[in-house]
Length: 212
Ligand SMILES: [Mg+2]
Image 1 (cartoon, helix red, strand yellow):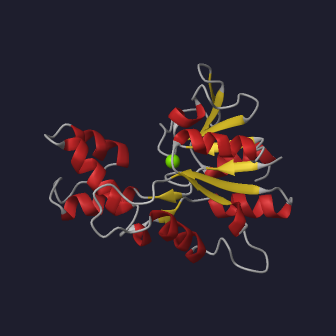
Image 2: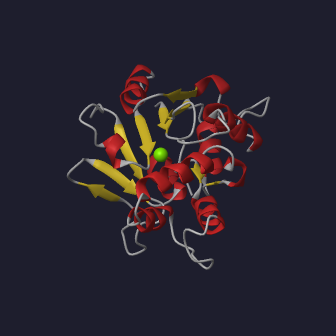
């Protein structure tokens, strides 16, 4: 077993940061409290909405990354992997700079720093080896990296990645959908893409390791 995990919106949760910044920029009312997707839909309905959204993303993934949070249960998941000596890789599609970011913040560097601040790389028993973190310039490069690392499982929040025709079907594909409808069964198989869907890291842990 070799587990690969996406970074943005799979390990790191930016939902709150998106809301705070959108309110600061007066793009939404001050009581707005939607998900990233709801915000995206709302902004994209505006004139120049796409550009505004990309500017916001550039800031959230860079300058304001320190406000982001770990998804609940990821640490426990990684602790089980460590205990079982299962190699874990983080593979992320990330450009060097954020869109329209005049401060030219290096997104990959701040992402690594953020992981370090969460204690992921702490010696003597890191949750993830620092050499197991990969940032790739395109989605194609990301998929090639996942193949090269011979991952047996890959966990990602984007169906565009897992459902890509380039993605090897021999890899167990797990879609992380954190705000999925509560009425959805704990484990759900998406027939069209032959992938498993889970709404929490606890559910993924239970499914993979049958541990509570
Ligand atoms: Mg992602």
